Amino acid sequence: MAKLLVKLQRYFRRKPVRFFTLLALYLAAGSLVFLHSGFAGESTVTGTQRVPREGPGLPYLGVMQLSRGFKAAATVPEGGRRHGPWFKSTSKEPVERGKAGDHSSSRSWALRGRSGREKEEDRARYVGCYVDNTRRRTLRGVSFFDYKKMTVFRCQDNCAERGYLYAGLEFGAECYCGHKIQASNASESECNMECKGERSNICGGVNRLSIYRLELAQESARRYGSAIFRGCFRQPDNVSIALPVSRLMLNMSVDKCVDFCTEKEYPLSALAGTSCRCGFPTTLFTLHEREDEQLCAQKCAGEEFESCGTAEYLLVYQTQVQDNRCMDRRFLPSRAKQLVALASFPGAGNTWARHLIELATGFYTGSYYFDGSLYNKGFKGERDHWRSGRTICIKTHESGQKEIESFDAAILLIRNPYKALMAEFNRKYGGHIGFAAHAHWKGKEWPEFVANYAPWWATHTLDWLRYGKKVLVVHFEDLKQDLFVQLQRMVGLLGITACQDRLLCVEGQKDGNFKRSGLRKLEYDPYTPEMRKMISGYIKTVDAALKLRNLSGVPDDYYPR
Image (tube, rainbow, N blue to C red; front, side, top):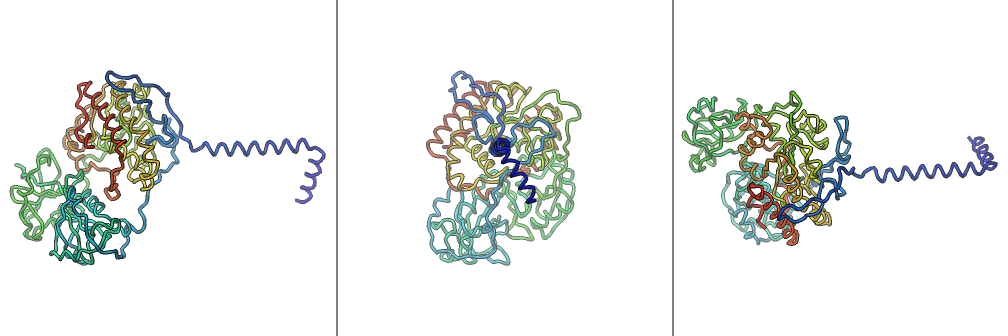
């Protein structure tokens, strides 16, 4: 090795020009490698920038289009638009993980005090201080702990999101949910531990629960253990056909009936006094006409704190058994005659709508992009090229004239911008079912995001109304409130005649795998007065555009601020 180095040294002494030439080439190659690594992570910009024309009576809102004017395009994979099923994404979305302390089993102590319950009364009513027992809990639903940031709001929201009637806080850091309070009262002075996340409120005490009754004007269904509460219903005329399996239970309880129907592999469990019935939601028993729960408020023989319905009015729960009547999906047997877009602003529920459409029609939906995480979750049409013609409709967030005119028809999904912006911000910084970190909300990211994306929420709708062919407008809020009717409208545009039993099956499987829990919702309003003023202007603009086309305007709850 030494001899070789000596020979090289002598060679370059005789020919110095060659030495400097070689050195220059080496430095140039190194510079190119450095520059390439610097640009490798940038998103590809697609499409052509344009200036939208002003419609009659509508203000110019500027150029807002997917991958145009943003460093990080919403829901567009890092590689930009995909060009075929051969493309494979290597990007991974960062998901915020909960801290280890959030679910610790150890108990900690906090300072004592009490105040501030009045401010919680708009979403819950304080019931009182109750005894708790580690062997037999007072509230027997789900529970979670946070020994650093527990607040009354977090506990209430977590329980309400899962449909429970009561939320209880203990030891300043533990949250318990339930449908019944199964213990006696304790002295108010025994609930004396301040919440770990807010010193101004009380979060129970040592083996003592501060219990709140929740206002269940929530979007989710109420739960009882693993079962979902569906409501009180009048017994159908042909009950033996509608609910074909039954058993007499003299010692009736909710658990016993739910377990029986689960064992028999039925998704519905109906309590009728001392009779337990099982079945599927069908046209004979649609679960669309709920009755007052007081009509079902007969105590269970086997559990005094529970209601078991009557011979005339059934108390219905959905078991963990999956209704397989709407779970089969496949690609279209022949090439689609029209390309139908499922268009929405990011954060408006497009992935959820795809889930519903696939269950209702039995066919896969496609995408203008490629998202590996969605493909892995069962959206098999994600990998197909969007023009393949094998999928029932195509997800897109695009809003340019050229892109819009590529489709023959469209379902335009519109959501309250306040909620859509927060949902997309969570997705951008926390993944499909994750949450943005507190630092992102409090830092410069949130104001910049609102300033860039709020105008785009308006221009996205305006562009589809202006350039789209055969556009069906569906409001996200209407879809949640009346899923059966709205889904029928959507499936009708797709040219599919959906079986009613299949649509009833979809209602029972509606959530899918992309629903965020209420566990980490913000405890404050992130919108400043300036942001609200700006967004309210965009809402009015979109409302006017819809009404100009003889469509119903935006829902009333777009104007709460």
